[in-house]
Image (tube, rainbow over all chains, first blue to last red; front, side, top):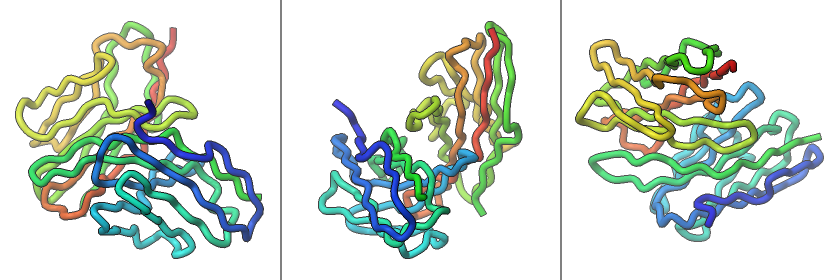
Amino acid sequence: DTAVSQTPKYLVTQMGNDKSIKCEQNLGHDTMYWYKQDSKKFLKIMFSYNNKELIINETVPNRFSPKSPDKAHLNLHINSLELGDSAVYFCASSQVLAETYNEQFFGPGTRLTVL
Amino acid sequence: AQSVAQPEDQVNVAEGNPLTVKCTYSVSGNPYLFWYVQYPNRGLQFLLKYITGDNLVKGSYGFEAEFNKSQTSFHLKKPSALVSDSALYFCAVRDSVDSNYQLIWGAGTKLIIKP
């Protein structure tokens, strides 16, 4: 069973469109994340979501919005797509504990191409 | 401010030789340190972590890392490299005094093992 899954794996779309990427984790974790990996492989945290507390990276445009219907899902919705949004988007999850810090488990990624 | 540096964009090693991938960090409190590996077109996989205790940490695939507080380093090592170790390696840190759930990531180091 896949621990963290994302759909779709590939997404090709036109500028200006709105799209969503879905993420599900079956690990029972309480915290989920969205990352953007650009063409130079830099990883940038976009959001983290823990027990209904959303932490937003201030550099993320408000065209990006995470939506969490329940603890096992954190979807990423993107409005008015731009060329610069082309990247690989990774979902991840972890169990956050007060006195330690557990590793994050990553999904396989969604390659978004904006034409 | 928290930061992670991976000073080498690329490391080349002959198969069978020892390898080292360097990581230095800067945090205000105590560091929680991680190494992840990314194979081409895949998500990131957790290798090992240092939270507290023994400075030498052993992880997956024969990798280990040594925490050095005085040098603020957490270098990844393996005694004998395999061609299959060729991948992109990321170091990450969380500051113990940071109340959010996010990791600070290095820029990644491409490891190439030549037969």
